[in-house]
Image 1 (spheres, rainbow, N blue to C red):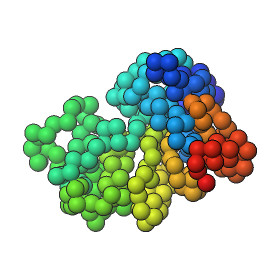
Image 2: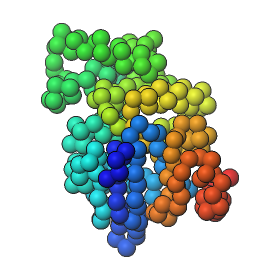
Image 3: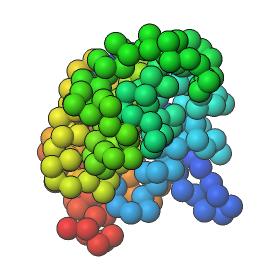
Length: 251
C-alpha cells in the first residue's frame, strides 16, 4: 500500500453475468485529499463506488483501508473503522426534527442499535453534540424543524450531519449535488470544503464545476476502466476524456 494512501483498490473487477461493469481498476486515495470519481453515463462509477463501500462484493481484486484488507467486510463493519458512506446509515426520518435525527445517529457511539424507546432524558445527553453538528452544516436555525419540512439541499446537509455523527476519518459521498438548485449546490460545496479540512473525501459527482472547485485529484472512468487520472487541469484537457464525454452526449 502506498505510504500516503488511506484507501487503495487493486485489480478491482465486478461482473454481472457476462457483463464486466468494473474492469481491473486500480485506485489510490491519498490521506487528507478530496478525490472525485467522474465519467460519462454507464462508465461504472456507481458500481465502483458500491464496491469500495462494500454494498457489492467484487468478482476479483482487493480493497485496503488504513493498510487493512477490507475486501470481505460488510458496510457496518468498515463504518466502525472510520470509513463511512454518506446516506448509508443516515436516511433522514421525515417526522423527526433535525436535532432528533442527529441524536439518533449519535446513539451509535454507544455501540448499540438505534433505541427509539429510550427516554427523552437519556436522549437529551446528545443535545449539545447534536447542536454542534447542526452548526457545522449550517442548520442551527432549523434544529426544531421536521426533516420533511426542510428544503432538498438542507435535507442533504442534515444527512451529512448524521454521517459526521459517526466521526468518520474518510467520508464517501455519492453524487452529493444531484437534483440541487444552484443555491443549494453552493451551500453544500462550501460544507464539503469545510469538513474536508480534517478528513479524506471520495465522491462521485456529475457536476464538473463542483469537481473542479473541490477536488485535489480526479479519476475518470469509461466502460468500467480507468481512462485518466490527475488534477482537473490535466484530465479536462486529456483527448481521451474529451472524446469519452462527447461520445456519451456530454458537452
